[in-house]
Image: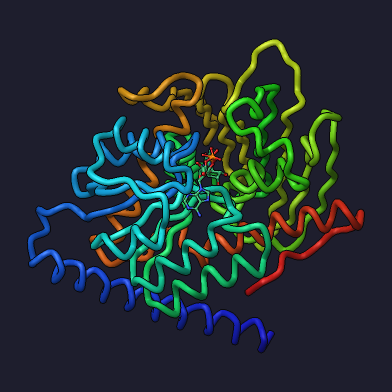
Length: 379
Ligand SMILES: NC(=O)c1ccc[n+]([C@@H]2O[C@H](COP(=O)([O-])OP(=O)(O)OC[C@H]3O[C@@H](n4cnc5c(N)ncnc54)[C@H](O)[C@@H]3O)[C@@H](O)[C@H]2O)c1
């Protein structure tokens, strides 16, 4: 009990220190910009592969941000991205990028192996950072990343975009209205036969695949909807013999609130309608239920009244089906980062917050290996 109290006090103090650091940063930014908030934040995108195109498209929709440089160790990719998006400069070396550019933020869209060295580099240069998930291949690297940003006093956001998807924001609105009462059950499900390996061939070689790549988003949603997790049981399967890791996982979680949730995922599901990348959600509360079903239909039942609405994401001008739900959420994640930077607020998917999601990923793998429930670790 005493230890729990001390942990809560430490978390509150840490949060206040970080909020102060962020406010200081916002003020410094305004100073650096000559007090003229009409000038956009100058940013760079590191990593010019498959997903970075979505980031660059979305940055173009945010007038308060301007991408002044792109960087990729593959010089050809960096130059192609520079040309496609009319970015002023391209670099093949991140050290050179930071040495030559005056940056207000950096957006890291490389795969996880390079995240630690790149975030540490950004922290040494005092540059606020948004970095793609998964944060890193190991817990030690994740901690080092978060600590590097904290020690340098620079804001760090993880690009955890599922909670920024239009349907997930609609569900959060229903929860915030209080109409469901306290929740006792949740199910978050993503089952697909989509060939993810075509665009992201590296995924077929990952020994830890679906939980670390996709499940991380679903486990994050479970935290957002139902709160922190006390412990979880997970079973993994590999159906596709041609890949290195697991492509099916089923998780049962017990939340601190007393609620339970099921989080299930598959890239080995053959079905009549391919729903990729739709995520299905069901949340049951004392006073009602909300369910996100096929084609982004949201049904809520409260007080005997049934309401059905479409919460389909908009098709942004540069987006393409079926990716548009994710593409729209990239815009909202970036928008959130810039708003937080400008206001000196902590982004909601800060490095510290994302450690709690990452801890669920590790607990799921450990539970699958041991065949027993596992409590997620803390910092
Ligand atoms: N949030 C989402 O919905 C979502 C969807 C897809 C991918 N992602 C994430 O985005 C990240 C990138 O994925 P991707 O599929 O675009 O990968 P990718 O392999 O297509 O692209 C990564 C790029 O980073 C470059 N790179 C690697 N190390 C570098 C370094 N040190 N400096 C500069 N450039 C470097 C590579 O040359 C490559 O061009 C991954 O972490 C992935 O998990 C997220």
